[in-house]
Length: 184
View 1 (cartoon, helix red, strand yellow):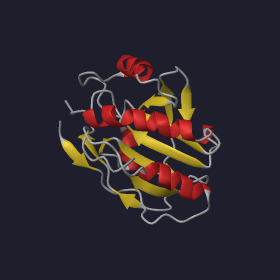
View 2 (cartoon, rainbow, N blue to C red):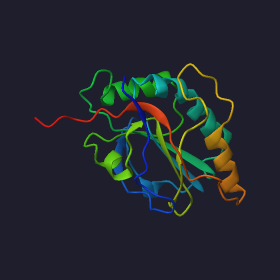
View 3 (cartoon, rainbow, N blue to C red):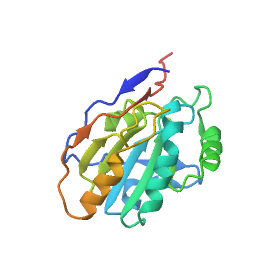
View 4 (tube, helix red, strand yellow):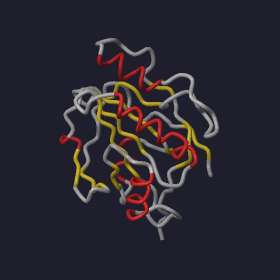
């Protein structure tokens, strides 16, 4: 496990890079499919202890808002050949964790690169115009065994829905590094 802090490639008000990726539901999803006021793109994977610790928080977060208020989209950009990764393991992970949001595979890793994602989880929150408003942590639990006290992303979504400006637009998340394919 290579502990990694997210870095800032996309900046506040940058457009969400578009994508068309296959989900664990066997459908293709594009950014244009989602019409919610807030769109949370989170780069996740199947094996990372940070993702495993926060996946329930993401499911809970989606449950707190209607799909017109918030839509979460999980994207797995890890090398599909890496242990416990790949599409079949994503389907298993989705079922085991009762994911209530699309979980998409980025097997070329181009979408992660276009977002500047480097770790899992690496969350990007966009407004209804698909402009970046926040890149950073889901909550204040920085290690897998910690219990969150401050629900950063939930607070940010509530603020946006109430027409308020966020205090920060970047607050690095922490997790495992994305497992990049090696050129051979």
